[in-house]
Image 1 (cartoon, rainbow, N blue to C red):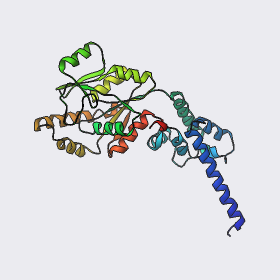
Image 2: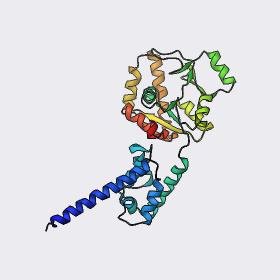
Image 3: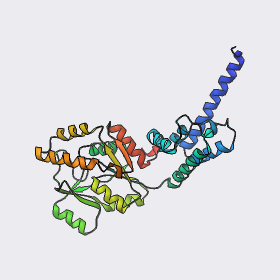
Image 4: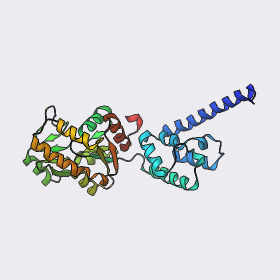
Length: 297
């Protein structure tokens, strides 16, 4: 039997009111008027029909500034919480996991963060970092120094600081690099330390786009850095990109391909893996790790 029209209308109004109440909870979290942890604690201590209790965990997490859909999905998997779960419907163990995560995140809020982007040769690190530079102006992208000659279109001080061997060695002697290494047994690369230290001290997040050797060196000196390994969609695609670059001769291409195979084996040393299927999506995933507030993007 169908319920009377008046009951259906009342039910519809109640459903609309419930959705609006949950939307207001999400707005408060997004505006930093209320913490996600407060919402969760309210859900667990109050009525099971409250807007806090009936809010999906995934929606609560996505409301947190800078977390975003990609990281939300990853966090849900790490916490062992299904996508359909509501905050009030979590079991004791799941509540403990979510509470611990939100407490850690609350303690880390407004802290600067150093994210290191690395990966095999020709995977597209430069393209992704350039997209971030052009699309997210609030992200500080550290400019590396190198002794290799500039490629067509590269600008000194924007893409790299192009130095002579003598200039580079002098900076090493003065301790002015966060990390430095010789890549492909040919050229030296390094990250000038003063701009990075200054930005972190000012509470800004910094992105480094460097080689794998450099990433290891940064992690050794700054364990709090988040290492991101940029992966190609497939090994075949990596080979295609490598051979299609057209800036190196056959011997150099063969050497770089062999180096790329060794570099791919290093991916498990990294904290996060991002697959470069599409430049914009890969860039968004990296920016989410930088924890840049939405209002500043």
